[in-house]
Amino acid sequence: MTDQTNNFDLNMHVARLLLSEPFFAAISRRINKRASLGVPTAGVVVNQETAQFEMLYNPNFMSSLTDPERRAVLIHEFYHIIFKHVTDRLPEGGMTKAWNIAADLAINSHIKNLPQGGCIPKQGKFVNFPEGMSAEWYLPRVEELMKQEQNRSQSGENDKQGQEQGQGSESPSQGDSGMNTLDDHSGWGNTTQEIKDIANERLKDIVKQASDEASRINSWGSVSSDVKKEIIESLKTKVDWRKVLRFFVKASQRANKSSTIRRINRRYPYIHSGRKSERVANIAISIDQSGSVDNEMLAMFFAELNKLSEIASFTVIPFDTEVDDSKVYQWRKGENRKVERVLHGGTCFDAPTEYVNKRDFDGHIVLTDMCAPKPKSSKCQRMWMTTQEYAGRYFETKERVVTVD
Image (tube, rainbow, N blue to C red; front, side, top):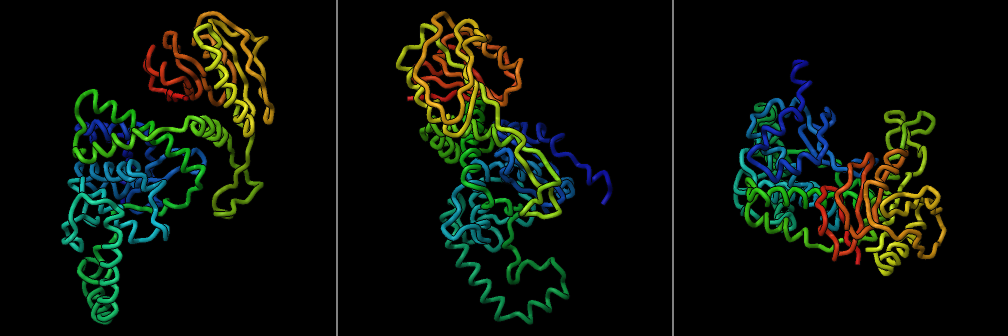
């Protein structure tokens, strides 16, 4: 294999490959893609440190494919994320080969031009399997098929060994051949529930933004009407804004890690460096105290901040058209505070944004009624919290807007 093949960079080709797939192109822009010789083909995982979805790909494998096949592999991996195979939906017995195959069958029903070697309904071992069913539907049928294959393999073990010696790996008709997944699923099931929850909240944002982009241009590419309907229905699930607030803080905290040789990595001793927490996340919470924010909304914000103080400390920035340094304070972990209104003017979101941008914050949450012009960009991740009445009323943003009730 040449060095040129090893240096294949999928990121250089993605935009062209997904030109006719606006929905998946929007998903792709929000998923990190990283070359790795540690996977034989490709796979998707949740990064344990950042709680972000990642697609890993073997550059040798991807460089060997045609453009239609590369596009199919990308879509295959994105479907695994969209259908939550990476974070949820594991059967009661946990991760098994049968579940891996069932998940691929459910996805591959919707994809054309897949490379050879995948599990596809109506083809190979699965010729009697219908298309378009869920992974849960395929699972018991795959388990039964695997039992049949195992029994057949055991009864003809000697013949099988003779054929393998004579024909090498190209005989797909015996034993377990033809029942291997196209991609690598080894990164599934190794994630804590906290990381899964954070990743799933981010997934809702990713899918929502991608579906909005596809709907605006009235083109979902190869996404079928049934899958489109399923995706849109999944977005109607009500989000617990209290969990979102906690996830935002915890996700910011997780970003503050660093490698150290002083602590051995317990899972991969002497292979990967250990981790240590360098500091807790520095979160800014700007509270809109303009006249348009009523006392009930203010009380709602303070009630949740009292609960949030159980897990973190944060800097509170009261603002209206400006930020008064003398009114900024630290809300320390474990403290409880009463509702307090210290300002009564208009609203300018540039004021708290400039205050945060000039300092070393890891995240910025703005509690507001949204009634002001769109502000300048933030140097750290920013999230907006408002009520259903005011959400989206004044300006649109690609940043997360969470409604409280």
